[in-house]
Image (cartoon, rainbow, N blue to C red; front, side, top):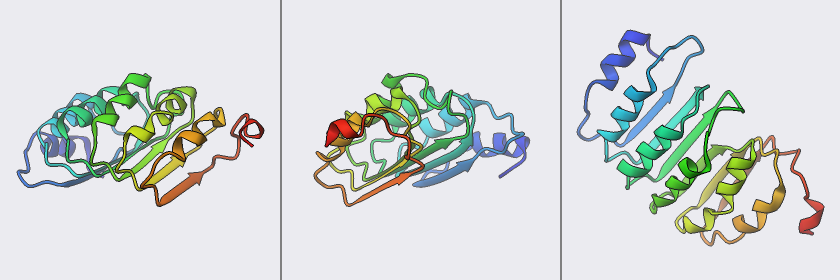
Length: 168
């Protein structure tokens, strides 16, 4: 992690061959989300993007990734705040445009994410899926079984799924 001023220096620059970017927001950091979105939009060659420890709605960042990073293969977005991580299902659904995505790690702690998971079969290249803290209706599980290339399924902290018995 960098100090706030150092973040700005990184985000203001372009790295022509950048393919992998990992960003972890520190608890006391006050980074402008627009800087990160702009950074992503200037790096269309990104194949791997990982962001953790954020506590704001990252819907606009998801749109920036979906609209600019068509070569994205590996996406990991996990946050601290369950209530704000993904503000709308349309932001998550925008990720369905990432046809080369083979690995997805996502925090799925509310109904918005459950709706998105039901659409995942559209990501035909997906080979690895890691879900964190699914606490919602288990109705998305049959959709996951339609992922023909899925080789790895990790469920972390998903011990409170609802309506599991109705799937049996």
